[in-house]
Image (cartoon, rainbow, N blue to C red; front, top):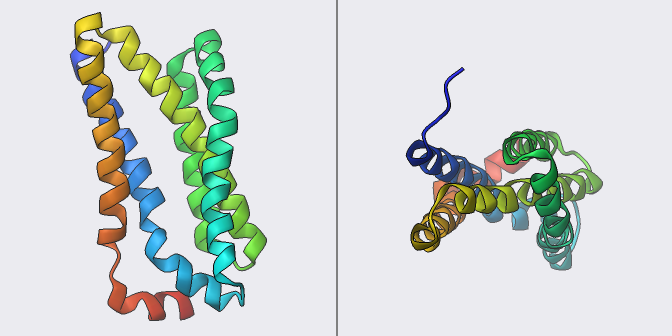
Length: 163
């Protein structure tokens, strides 16, 4: 089995980070209509958004240590799998608790992805290249999060949520 060259790893990490953050941002435009459909208040949107961030905040130091112990790749793969599961739960969610479960799992996925990816960049770059590598990874993250809501067709939001 051949090793992937370090110069090819960064674009792979960036693509994965972009896709995951695209998925995180994609649900933002439908949350208000979805919450209304569940009969919940606007405060619930805040709690759903916070569930993601708090989970990522609490677990990131732990997953950073785990990536040092067990390797970066295994945690990144696990993060992508957890993210996919979170999106499936969100898509089939018929109860409010399922949306909370999805958002909590998204936070777990982000914690499984971001620290190991940043560490991976640190592992494969020189001191002089490190800031640029992490900057590119951060740009992919931000770009995915910003483009996600733009991909949603607001005209069909009502039909999507009702249907």
